[in-house]
Image (cartoon, rainbow, N blue to C red; front, side):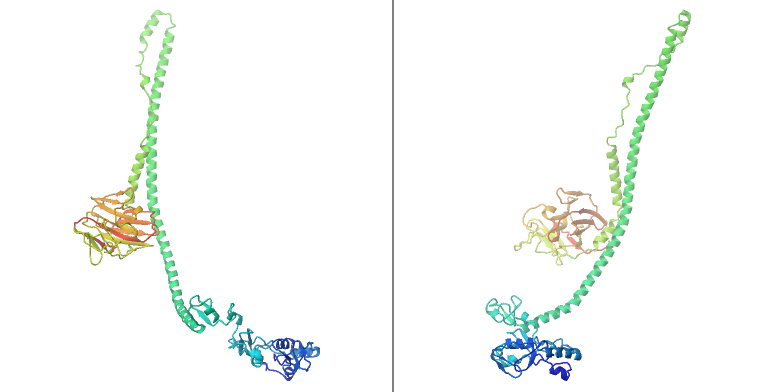
Length: 537
């Protein structure tokens, strides 16, 4: 029966196969009417051709003709009754693939025909012997997708090795020896996993939201730090520019004064020469007039009154040389350098030290790496050199010759800072080293060999490089801070007590884990101590 409400007229103009109003109705020789599509498909599945209603047999397949009169009446019925062709199938149910009008709920699916049937259209599979051999299963949608493309069998197992659905034949061919389980069993496993994932998702979302907040806070803090640094840097550079401009003005003044002195001397000599020329010219004129007189008395009287010639100066030895500026610029630059150094000392290293101290890390010394002469405290915070070489088992991590020790902790990114007390020590070194340094033989302690270390040797402070960087002596050096920015390639050292910067190695290239490293080779028993940061020092 059709699911929709029907009238007498509709029932009498419905196909007995699809139970819907005729669509292109045809009439058999026995007088029964069917949709052309329905009766054609029905006969395609039969061995002998018969009427589905009265079972009347035909010797040959009848040549069907459209029943024009019935077709027109069926059309009128559709228009008049306006059958609502809404499927009688709930969303979770499988519809019949044969119903052409109102779709009925499928009760079985055929794995041979790849078709789902309602109870009415399933009838041939229950009656016809050949169709009874077909494999019927509970209703399934998308039957083609549920069949093995290779063996044309139902995918009812799951291969755990290749994580794919397989049929029974697959387990003895391509997936032989692979562990397989029923789909339901794997479904339950995967459903449990999905449930865990669904449970984890809110937590992961929350974690990512928290990370976004942290990143935004970092950006905000970075902006504030940048503004403060730019403001402070602007003041410093303004002061330095003032020093440079003052040095430039003093240099220009020195050059101008030298030039002025030379010009004045030249002008004075020129005036003296011009005066001598004037005197000589006047005397020459008088002598010329006197030489033309014939009055002897007048000549002799006048000749006596002639002025004595001025003292003759040897002008061949007189010269004015251009001023020499050799060394003027260098002396000016030396003075500028001294001034700039004084200004540099005025920089607030205390603020810089406080900033790097926020990256303090808790590190402890690793006895597995310590040279046999070194003695470590139980808490791994102190080390000093002993007088006896301990007999220890072979260990590739241990320093065999040089009296070094590494920390247990290493760092492969970011920033970190630690402090070491060096008070009362005579010969020590500290810094960081990469993991692959040579621990067996003699080597140079330079960045090329994997060391970034500050040394105190014979009352001299040195950063080991090629060549070594000799640093100014720091009286009373008691505690050294070490700051590393792995990503920026920076290693900096600080005098913690004086709260000033000692030295920075910049442009370093780090490609592997870095370990804090300490060195002690003088047996005065005063230890090197890894100390906690105290920003009130």
